[in-house]
Length: 400
Image 1: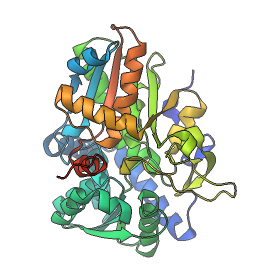
Image 2: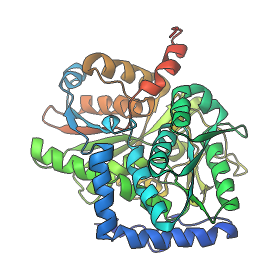
Image 3: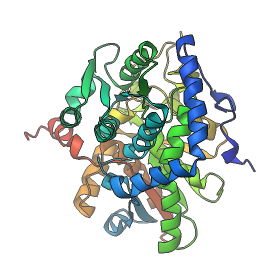
């Protein structure tokens, strides 16, 4: 049996995945960041402040909710929702930004930058920066700015400067590129809060650790409410921070099956999707070695998903590693399935999921139908869908 908690190694590798592929300019600040993180992660004072903020600012623990009507409608296994949509700012992203802003403060950094796709990480970053009184710049692709206008306005209300990125596909990949360029130019006073379990080491480990509160709570809550361990966990995967946050506490529990749901977009045959594990190649993207969407020359290609947060041509290196070891299975949900899941969950449970989370709900429902009624599935409801209402209305020809 593999002890998954020995990863990453000291160089940030999950066997062949992860590591640091960065410019010489960034090597010093990545080393400084890694050393600072290793210090604070074992600091009782830091952990106390972090967990106090999670409790009294974020509003944790988030509930583990038995979706009885959804279960009855779908049939089969019992469906449980880990309600990250009820966090302050409306998604799991705040867990990570609270941790990273405390680290930035400990390091004496005065300027915060971030990238965002669906806008939830941007909002979470702008929120904690406002709370700390720090300047905040958020890079966001032009396409995502148009489809996530509500979150753009939220960031501006919080005092952040939102910079539109017009290069490439004008989505999350390109926003991350621009944030990296900014960091290279402003290493002395700037802290880059990456929103997912990607990027050069130590980001995959650090973001995972801050989000692992999701799985820790879910394990304890399930044992208290039902007893024992769930049979399966389901979470959407773009970069993969919400999924690693849920999975991590269960990695050594081999009876618990893990399912990461990638965005199949318009369908795998169309080529318009964002399923880098299912249909990508091993390569280097944004400072780490992982599965990426690339052409025959190794160049990163454009992806598509109805959800801005999953519209990314790579995946966190720990997910690539879990796929290699067959510890987690990476499955698919397309745009249509996600939309249907959005509507069904809204109608039968009164919960609007983010389009990202709707991918997990879509696959979770399929899985439930294959299992007996005495089995239990936890789906990570990573965010709420208020931000997506205009996008969905426009797609369905409804004026809002």
